[in-house]
Amino acid sequence: MKSLHDSHFDSVDVVLSRLSDVDYIADRQLATAIYLAFNLEKPVLVEGPAGVGKTELAKSMASILDVPLIRLQCYEGLDESKALYEWKYGKQLLYTQLLKDKLAEMMQGAVGLAASIEKLHAHDDLFFSEHFLQPRPLYQALHQERGCVLLIDEIDKSDPEFEAFLLEVLSDFQVSVPELGTIAAKVKPLVFLTSNNTREMSDALKRRCLHLHIPFPEAAIERRILERRVPGLSETLNRELVAFVQAVRQIDLKKQPSVSETIDWAKTLLLLNAEHLNLDLVRDTLYVFLKFEQDIASAREQLPALLTQARKDAEMAHATGSRHAKHA
Image (cartoon, rainbow, N blue to C red; front, side, top):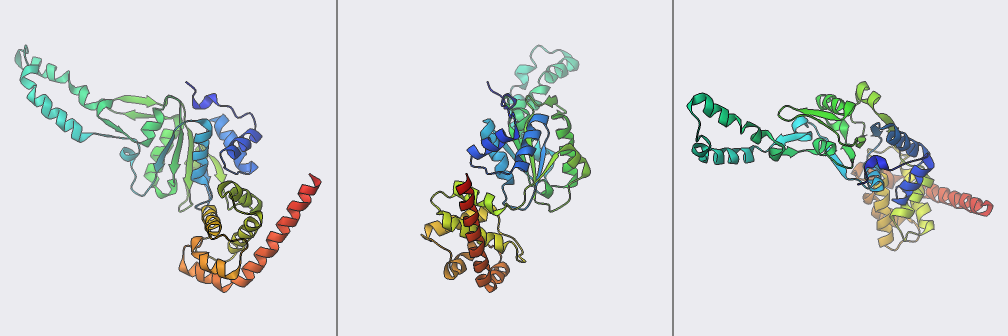
């Protein structure tokens, strides 16, 4: 049975190619981080704005490696029991009742209190075995026969206390369950921790991980993403759309449009049979990629200038692409 570490990435170029095969368009810096994380068996702390592909990166790597993706979604108040395991108390209670009904039968042959207690103790471990344990994501990740990609999503939303516990788990990929003993990973998972930078991560966690920051992509990368994610979009509309989004990201907004929102807008324009951007079309669809009314109002005020700039940038991208094609 093939496990996670049976796969090989011989170079950064191989990582770039494999990511492209699953429609994840990456730059060389990102591919280098993945290459090092895989071969050094180190977790990756992936930071950057929401919607730039942090979670999608973990999903893509699980697809490439053909192993399960196990996701732990972090939130305020998340603790060890919700991340690691819980006991099925209802099931334990039911079995306790069954045991009570069978008590007389179990005590047959026991002479005296000591002998009776010894017979009862023979069933102690039954109630704290894996049969009664509810595995949570971290426990599941340690038990994967072939390994897995473990995604610890939005770690910045968890409390510092949970971060300290997580650091202990990541240090040697094993945990102690008082009733069962120490449980070590059968195969070390490939670990991604994502953060939207709502709070600063501890120095200890940063030392444990490789650090990767995914910013909003450059125009050329974003155009390639749309080519893969929105088939049927014309090259002209692709250039104009990306140039417009790139221009919008330069103005003062509460929330800049993410890559996922660029994709949504591209699908919207394709559905509307658009061939070029124009004032009315952009004005009527701003809400697809801008999520706050104040941002929509700000963009509307600057719409003519933004559209003019986008057209210039799109024409320049077309001219640059034509020159490269001529020399290729």
